[in-house]
Length: 224
Image (tube, rainbow, N blue to C red):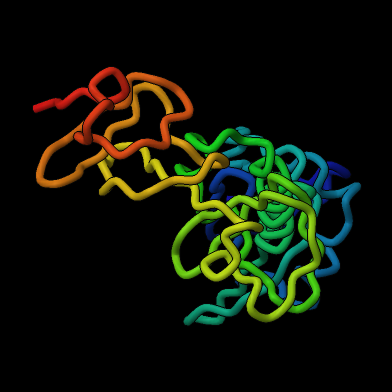
């Protein structure tokens, strides 16, 4: 078996393994240094063919990025090429960029969607960080949103500064215990909570009243 390069030069090989954007060639007929010289040449590797018994068995196009050589038992040497921008390092950079974009876009999500991707939000920073109104952060495992623009400082964390931060209360798929909201993070119509051993559903938007108390019959309904 041999590999036929794009410039029609050849190399006897023992194995050719393709896995997506990764191509590995193993041979006993070239040293690692020689393999590097061969496979670093994008003109040679632009199109390669596996030839068996005089016939082309498979064609490999675009594997032009040399990655590494390796040594196997039996004096077998291998070389790995990738398609451009598909090396493990490049994939990591792409992933990092995608996560960075997702974190930026997450700030525009409404509360009911934001809580579902809570891990995208940064931890609260108390060292002079400027926060804009609506910006969301994690603090002690809970998601909060900023109520007014300010520069953070010690003691102004989301728990101790309720005038600056509001907890994002409802988590999809769960029915949390009711807690007194402020006007900035009320319960919305359809939100469900537990309170005094019962489950309640809000009948209105912007609901800040305690369920089950006198006068809230049109604000909350008990559900089984």
